Amino acid sequence: MTGRRVMSGPRLRRAVQLAFLVLFFALLVLARPRPGAEPSPVLQAFFHFDPLILIATWLAAHAVPAAALWSLVVIGMTIVLGRVFCGWICPLGTIHAVASRMFHGRRGKPTRPDRWSRWQLAKYYLLVAFLAMAALGGHWVAIFDPLVLLYRTTTVALMPGLQWAVEEGSTAVYQADPGVGPVRLTQATEPVYAFLRDHVFVVPDQAFLGAGLIAAVFVLTVALNAYRRRFWCRYLCPLGALLGLFAWRPLLRRKTQSDTCNQCDLCGMACHGAAAAAPGERWKAAECLGCLNCTESCARGSVHFGPTGPWKRAPGEERLGLSRRAALWAAAGGVAALALLRANPLSRARKYHPRLIRPPGARPEREFLARCTGCGLCIKVCPTGGLQPAITEAGLEGLWTPRLEPKLGYCDDNCNLCGQVCPTGAIEPLPLEAKKQVKIGLACFDTTRCIPYAYARECIVCEEHCPVPDKAIYTVEVEVEDHDGNRVVVKQPHVDPDRCTGCGFCENKCVFTDRPAIRVTSANETRHPDNQPILPELDWDDPY
Image 1 (spheres, rainbow, N blue to C red):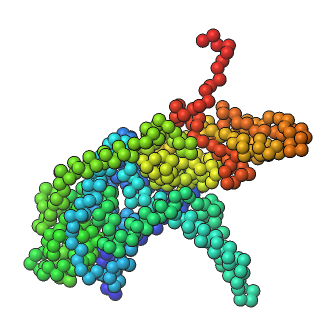
Image 2 (image 1 turned 60 degrees about the vertical axis):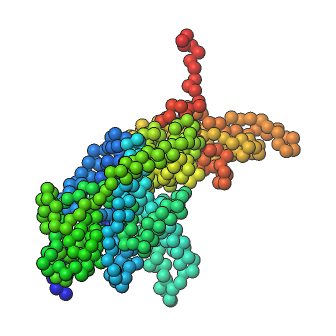
Image 3 (image 1 turned 90 degrees about the vertical axis):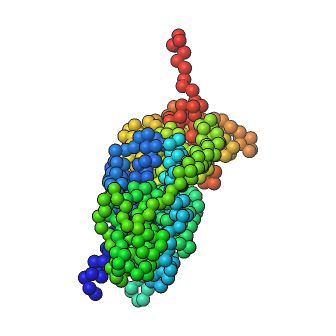
């Protein structure tokens, strides 16, 4: 094998793609719960280098974390080199490239050229619609951001699925205890299981609500590669569209030597982005992913990349052909879509969903939705598995944003990781002592199910598990009559609303696992003054 083949552009690109894909998943694994430990800002690296998150958050919330300014590096790189982020770095783009290679042709080699299609302009108009929504405070574009989509899918669906398979598989091997003589298969499987349990999964039996829907969206985006190579990247990706606008005239552009080119169109067959409209020189810089397949496939060496001044158009280079009228219609469509998303009482803060319990440090709902990307990073670091992606609790505008589901996990009193890892500041990074003072909800008893009330028997599980130092749950001895007419004394629990923080520990530990007899709702949350039914006690000694 020659040195030229070893160091060819596509081979180097694949090595770089693999390295960034491994880095992406490595950072995801490292974002495991570590109460008491400061999470590294490196865990947020991919989100801070995402210019779509930067621009959308700035438009929606009029503020961005300083670390997000690192995404300007990607914009600068795109202006110089073109959409190399899409072709070399984006982990979801790498997955689509692998899927395309599997779906199309022997060894991934297509048998016909992929011509540029006007349908590829759809992603630009979608971007305009999403940015119009962001300008009015709607952050829905982040739902379709490729980095957010892959992180959320891996956190909510892929990792829990892998965890279930590993746990069930290792249990089956352990119970069967297969082996030959003194050699047992468990001698190999148990150390692997222990390592994954302690260093990868950490939270036992972790599962998330709505994982099926999130997985279905991901599977659909990958399956579309069977119809067109890198379908998502060509037609739908809003980040790709944004980078395409900055790659209008990059300094490094494709050049074709017309005197040696025979227009065989091998370069068009190999093009990942379908950037060529016809054989030969005709080429759109904004659609090129910089994969270098065209230079590798050209047997005559007629295609190469070289520097070109931004003030001049390279021979054969074509404009995108975006329509101003279509862009205006797309913006109007984005505004109309946001109006529909907010056409319910929850989105207008007139009513509060009882199960929409946001993590401590979450900003007021409108500002929270203007910042939250639904990336799942806070969900990933939650040590109890209590943070879950919202489905209907926050309306469509709040789809897949984090909420606490106490039945699945409580808010650990000694943990403030969610605010420390949030890449956009939707959850403020509160110091631990300040976090303990924040109220995210209020516990209340269902006396038709609570054992001391409904069945005249002792049960103080909720009071025992209440983590508040002075106990937000207290008991009152009450004399009641049992079925036989005997007078018995039971301790009936009550909630002190001034001390209850809504952590959900009591609901999580209630002996009723189907529908707990004590439940936490969003009432009394600190971030919403209008959602506090418990009025402060009056000081009767105050003459005013």
